Image (cartoon, rainbow, N blue to C red; front, side, top):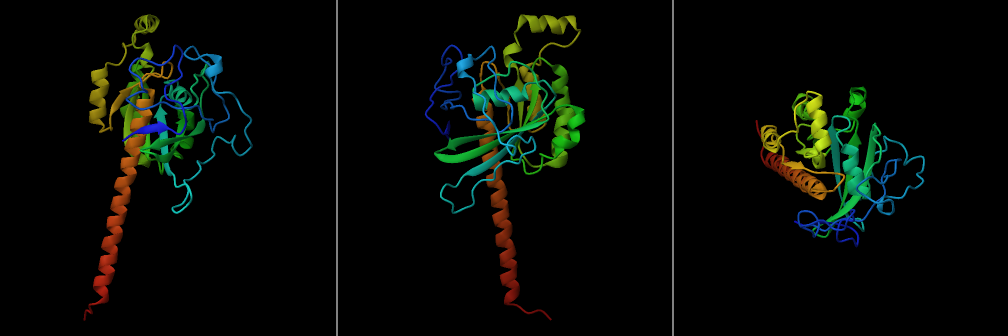
Length: 289
């Protein structure tokens, strides 16, 4: 199954040209920038030049609301049928959830950390030539937003449980906080375990800070892979929003997992409808005393 952006771009436009191993990440072609549905525009960071970052635009009052619901896909029979996918990113604050979305949708990188309350971004991709609209929900990791965050969990098609590979506490909170919270509100949706800030795993300054602070070192990949198997996540992937390494692979995996999940639900619903109809017809021709 092939996923590509609904645009002309063939390779990711990161600083220094296309990365080794292209075309694209994972054999897929890369994207063109799209506009975020949140009021904040992407800012150029150390990984992207200013001319390649997403330019700001004026948003209407309806668009600027952080609680704006995603646009539902067109109904069946419309001129341009489009499958809709809701993808929610969860994880501790400052692990890089917003950076993942901004880098993926806008080809930019936030220069400063800004705590998120709740933002949504909309992207259109083509899956085997069919249009798919993916709504990316960026949630807050702070406890102050627990009640607000839980409002976006119902009807989610796929979750990205994010932790920073250089913040062991965020890794521990996957099982202590985030997975229980997800399953309380949505027990069936697939979950992908995502290790963020992978470019810092071998950063000397980060390693020195971890050592001086008496904290553990970066989360080992085998340990993260073992957790993914333990919590029955679809997969474990590490990526970097700064370098965009494995970035597209993360969202491609999320899209495919969501499509498979929706197909299973539809199959169960259709089977249930057939059984119900069969019972009605069976009772119609028989009379019981």
